[in-house]
Length: 155
Image (cartoon, rainbow, N blue to C red):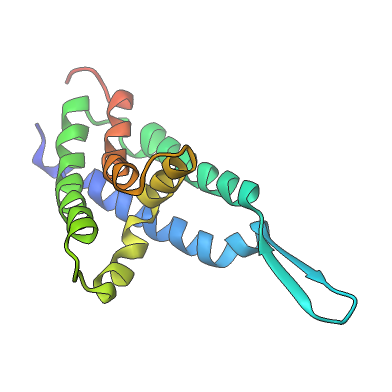
């Protein structure tokens, strides 16, 4: 296993999370927020859940395809799995602490939210499929392992 490739999956996922966070925050409202002017001049703002879900699916698949077809195509499946584990373990520890430590600091959660946006979109999609919050967030932390089938079989 090449040690220099261990950083690829965590760095790619964190950068992809930052990019999808900023696209969701700034470009997302242009896509899924509805604004309507009432007869009395007031403006009614609502979120279209279908468009929001489509944006989350598109961002998730875009990151998955970019990673699979471009960023990790030279890596073996074992290298991708080991590299993904470097990201999964701390993410899982933080999510478990957020779920079950009653006094987990909100400032930490808000600070970390841009870095977990990519897997967060997966947990949001899983919750729309009626999975409970703890199960959806824990399963979503294993999203970097979705790159493994796209790796090369052997060196």
